[in-house]
Length: 202
Image: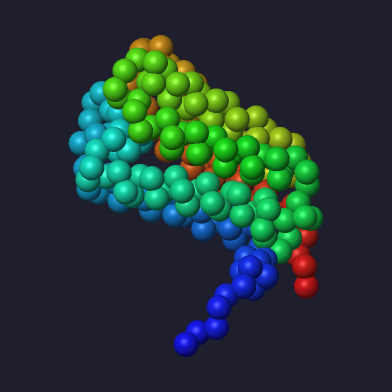
């Protein structure tokens, strides 16, 4: 029989990973979950008047990979900020961004459940999505200022935000594209920044 795993043993296991590893696993898990959703039902997003990733959260066939994707990204950011072996060495602002990102993902997940039922719930979900987009831009600009690297990714993200704004006002319909472009560029920036700004514990 296996010995009981104590809380301290779990803590030591968590802290065997660096913050960047948690972030990377979370973001790759998110990407895999979204890719699986698209593979199961590409019609939601791969069409002229494309929908958004959240459409996958309200359909039975794709709900599990959708929520799993968000849960992995949330867990990766939270564990990186609070349980990684180098989490205490991260800059205070980076830890705050990681925790803030995790909170916004939880709100995104929670607001997805009923956003197609009525306008108030839809407005809440859209508001959370806008807040997440603004947050990612602010965080990305801070990360660029700290590292002076990956300017191309920042510019790609800003371009994606402009397209998102045009989509929201109804001039174009590229919601899924903007979500992928802005999310992917932010994911890479977050991983590289976490890896560079953390201090290895030997």
